[in-house]
Image 1 (cartoon, helix red, strand yellow):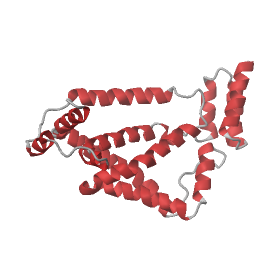
Image 2: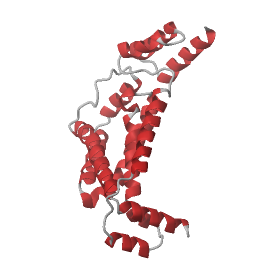
Image 3: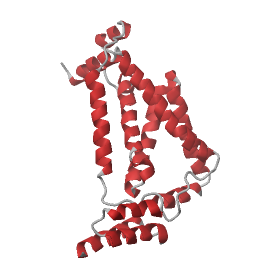
Image 4: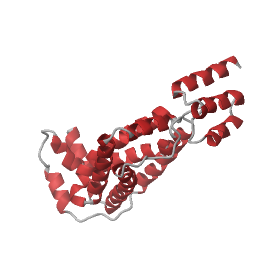
Length: 239
């Protein structure tokens, strides 16, 4: 059996299970809820967070806030993607539109080590990927692939399955645990959102003074993240 046929068979089986459908609906609602507030803030012309301009993410958001209609445009696209996810007939388009936005936010969060979306953004990427996989039967026709197979057409007309997919949701729980654990141990030091929060890391730092200097470098002096990290790691090596 060809790979395309195997994917069709797998997808057809998943589509028949109501629990997978409930999970898709859940992901659509959660993802929409994540973009509606942030999109509205941009359309209203307000600054997205109260982060200090000295914070790496604060640097970015302050500059973004002053880009005029580009800032508003981002908000419009975010709210459009969110609304599309809530409309069943538009949900596929919403998932496609949503994906590059949340992927960009995830990469940005890791680049500046922003606590605010360090955990939520990769989880949202995974939820978005699930929706794209859920709509595989629609998205595959973006490319000149084969028409619907007899198996797909038969699956659409067959009754739904009520069996709870225990292994799938156990896998989801395992992925959540792995992601949370990996993110919690991904960096030796982070700017955090405020100076007090940043300094809480110094208690467990191998060089508390270097950690405090790092926090001052970020929040007090407003230096670039890479420069502050280089100074911190250099201090650790010299200890």
